[in-house]
Image 1 (cartoon, one colour):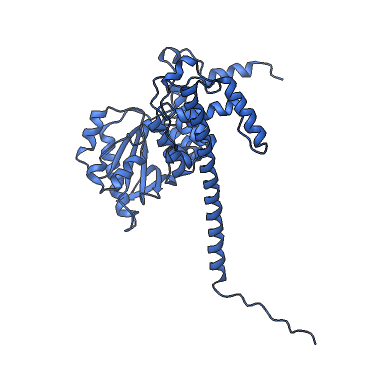
Image 2: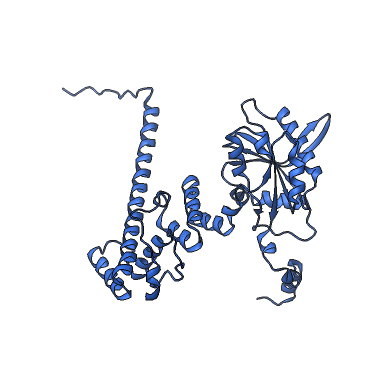
Length: 371
């Protein structure tokens, strides 16, 4: 007698259970990858530490490290990263976090023997922040950043925001460490703790828009259009948490419309952020205009659960004393920062006037018989 088929009954809560288990698997995979990465960084630290200390204690040189490289590759043929140059890089990785009298100039070759006495004893374990980022990120840090505390800051930010190696390189080259939290603000007197500290760290000074090409006669609308056209790069420069709401957002008060240059919502601060763009030096009247914008947005657009709206005035230049006076008695949270295009501002003054303009270059190309 044939068995009777039974229909499989799926419980109502099955989708929720499945989603929970899928998330748990992903978490386990992530933890496994992080654990493997942590072990690898610890291994490289130990190898570099052994080389550095034996150089100092018994005079290990190039020949010994070459032999070590050969023996490690022979013992572990399935593993990469044991070339002689890689071993010297591991040594440099360890020493990058020591207070050395002399920096390591060449990471590919061993230092001169007379400099070995300057090596200090390396700690047994790397700083915790370094264990959370891949080896390639660590190489970028000790090759591009001089100060140990600055390296650790970038490492922590990489873990926090999940920066790729390319993004980390951009942040280092733009000097983020020196710019973060440097905007002139009145947050201490207008926002409660800890929001005031978080808001301060969310702003920079200056902002670097090196992805823009602006002509000498550009106006604020050109700057605004350029930032929106490159919104992904703009958001990267603004930093984590900014969500783009719109440009030229209408603000209707007393049957008249004003237009906000750029409006964002900050996901961590839980508030709107108004950005007012200026192609000129900061004027105290700009703070009064921004105060008006913030009052109107808090009344017309802000949700009861939102934190107070923040304003950011981005100007071509500013006088610090004037900016501080302009914000002193305003009860709305406002920050003032400069913006710059890295390409132009990084040129020496003696060269800025001697280089051809974009129009001159285009005219020259058009006159050539190109294939």
